[in-house]
Image (cartoon, rainbow, N blue to C red; front, side):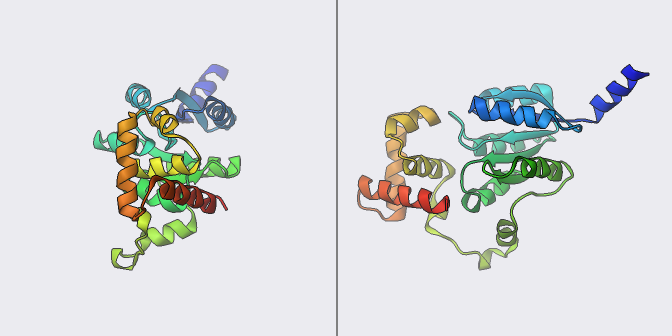
Amino acid sequence: MAKLLKKQVARQRSRIFLVEDHPVFREGLAKLLNAEPDFTVCGEAGDARQGLKSILKLKPNLVVVDLALPGKSGLELIKEIRSLKLPVKLLVVSMFDEALYAQRVLRAGGDGYIMKQEDPQEIIFAIRDVLAGHIYVTENVFEESAKPSSEKKAGPLDQLTDSELEVLELLGQGKSTLEISRELRLTGAEITTHSNSIRRKLKLNSLNALIRYAVCWVESSQK
């Protein structure tokens, strides 16, 4: 009877897969979720390629995705999962500013967005909310996404592609072209191309002006 009860409890647990490239955060989140009676972490990956391969095999109920992954970004992973029509919920847990990224995540097919700085219990709440079929974002982001397109205010950063936005974020964190290319697994030439495109779109005259803009933007988004 006890064994049967354990099997029933195990079947009731939602299976969660983690795609996160920072081992310390990934391990801490896995420990947090496995302590909950209705969750079990069924697998982990440090990049999008391995993540997709394991998701196809393990068929989790929900995937927790970081945006800043080496090589293919979390946004690209979400788009790929949705293109395959996999019946899985997708929640982004990221350090990137929700006000800027959440709507991009929702447009890509994500089910929610929460920042890593939030209380651990709020992350647990967000996971349960998404598993229940809801969209999880802050009230401000929800109100903005609910507006008709004609009422939405387009900012200068809305012109940037997802990849360009990632490069801008990393420049604002003080990372060099070499460091960015390693983190995103792109060539130095590709990073330079993205940087030049960002400069044109934001009407900045030089690389130094771009870096100053990026640093100020990152600092303001963290306040």
